[in-house]
Amino acid sequence: MKQLWNLSHIQPETRNLLEGDTIPAMFWSGVAQRGPDVWMRQKDLGIWRSWTWARTGEAVREVAGGLLALGFAPHETASILSNTVIEWVLADLAVLSCGGVSNGIYPTDAPAQVQYLCEDSGTTILFVEDDEQLDKALEVRDRLPRLRRIVVFDMKGLRDLRDPMVTSLDELRRMGRDYLAQHPDEVMQRVGQVKPGDLAILVYTSGTTGKPKGAMHSHAGLVYTVRGYNTLIARSADDECMCFLPLCHIAERLGGEYFSLYTGAKLNFVENPETVPENVREIAPTVFTAVPRVWEKFYSGVMIGLKEASGLQQRAYAWAIGVGTRIAERVLQGQPVPASLKLQYAAADALVLSNVRKMIGIDRSRFLVTGAAPISPELVKWYLALGVPMLEVWGMTETCGAATGIPATRIKPGSIGPAASYNEVRIDPATGEIQVKGPNVFMGYLNQPEKTAETFTADGWLRTGDVGGVDAEGFFRITDRMKDIIITAGGKNVTPSEFENELKFSPYITDAVVIGDRRPYLTAIVMIDQENVEKYAQDHDVPFSNYASLTRAPEVQALIQSEIDRVNRKFARVEQVKKFFLLDTQLSAEDEELTPTMKLKRKLVQAKYAPQIEAMYA
Image (tube, rainbow, N blue to C red; front, side):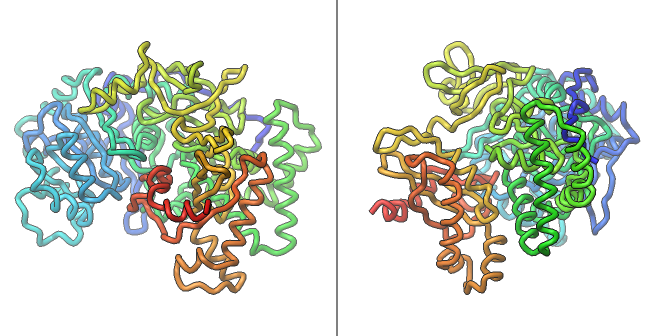
């Protein structure tokens, strides 16, 4: 049984678990220390197949040897255009072991974006996942004079391809074996030549405004940060993690690959982004990091399932979650939990709550971590009532991921926690902006010295662009992005993210953008949750033929209006949304309106749907 009133077992870890002052040095130290232990697992033809540290080391050595055979020089850049698969990690560690710079490209990026990222980063070797990603590379390669070779992970459907620039990963490994037979020590010599201050990885910002910027991170910064992570949210070699967010994003690169490299925690790769709900139940991770979109989806699944349950089951859930909520409220207030309530919780857990956790796949989870976007405080409380603490972390690409974090023994929903031990965080008294300083902060933007200069204050603090406050205990809270704060025509300052986060707590709403700057009242652009709204329509005999007609159905409009009414009741009249419209196009990460982390791009959405917005103010 989960004892949510006793979270003292989730302690930070300060010991140095792995030697090495660069990522490759740390990796090869791990191979030597943990050789026969399993590090990664990936599903192949329905079977989970394990990769030990020794097997991973052998593969990385061969890929690195292949790169050396191709003349890959220190400080050259290789890019990886792929979904989150084990081969991504092999390529990344091989590039770093050669003293190169590793850059990730989102698999949802269009050919023009691939061209820009390869061009800006000076990519000479491009790893691609399969024929779909290869097509993008081939379409733009004539405009990339520095590109020498394209390496394909999965050659399915490409057996007849004959192209001197294209090589399979298996062939690259064979080239590596042949090369290393003649030069057996060269990979480790390269590893020894890598210096902590060398540029290690590029992480391109998601580009909510303008072209993506390549954030530069050194080996020293990466090693310092992953060691620091363990003082924030400790993992061990006994932990099972799930690897499913894009590895080119700072969250999975640092919090997944490199953090697990350091701690020895096992990385389990999902089959594809669509199978996350099934895979999480199979893996049952002990530590689970995800973005709010995932936590909202799990909550929605439970709520929708509950509507199909019998009356008895609904009453049992209501009683059980009520018991959990009463305990959660005491835990959040630092109050003791009486024995009578603990006894009730034992029954609630056995009868209902453990089954809900198993249905989601979090029954073994010691704790959940959420970050990359704001999350509703109510959702944090719900997961705690289920029996699993949710710890919110905050950071950005430029801070190497988490810069603040909620400690398990002092959860404050709505807060992002105190500054992590490895950096400083302050509030600028003039603007209210949250600013960060520490060795984890990035080296600057590649090829953009002016943008880099703009990002730092005169005394060396990183401008994050987030506005917030800090309480007497040193816990920070974000109110919004500086550029997103709305000032209504009546002069009222409104932080739209608070309303948007409450709205996303609805199982029928995936995302929303609140409008109202210099306007007489607030309105909203809403993106519905297709699966749940379709089910609502089917259950209530609402006719629709496609996604667009679904959004226009009067019953669906009324459903979303009721969700907006529910949220409006929590806000002052001037902060309430008066009108809304539903996006009638089903969006995915390939669409320009969404970032790769599935957040609506506020400025682009407002510009693209200007006529609909004006109609709400007509």
